[in-house]
Amino acid sequence: MPFAGCVFHQKHFAGTNDTFLAIIAPTNGVLSVVSDGQKADLEWPYAPEYRLESSTNGGINWTVVRAKPLLTNGWNMLTIDPASLSDLFRLSK
Image 1 (cartoon, helix red, strand yellow):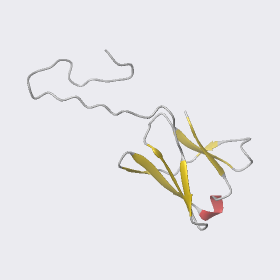
Image 2 (cartoon, rainbow, N blue to C red; image 1 turned 90 degrees about the horizontal axis):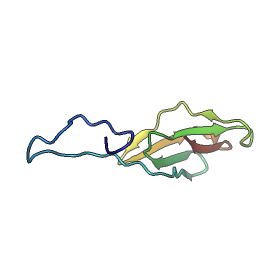
Image 3 (cartoon, rainbow, N blue to C red; image 1 turned 45 degrees about the horizontal axis):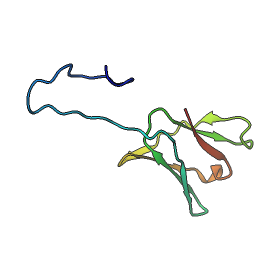
Image 4 (cartoon, rainbow, N blue to C red; image 1 turned 120 degrees about the vertical axis):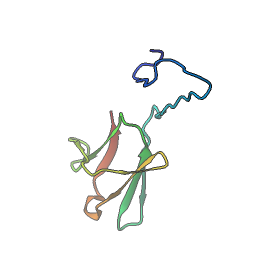
């Protein structure tokens, strides 16, 4: 296989109508936060190797955020509960 981590469903080319699809994930997870003071929307590029984590104690302990983000146009989007606005968030592999 020419690319590590790739699974090819078609092992060889069969004709002129063959297609190749690749999902390319960013190498650096960038987390954006937009807040209006009442809620926060977290956004980050879709990359299956990253998970969203939160900390309520200044970054000493981190836990995986269990809420599922909405995937739209290659971006994960998650609205955070107003009670969590003082938490820290990060993307982790």
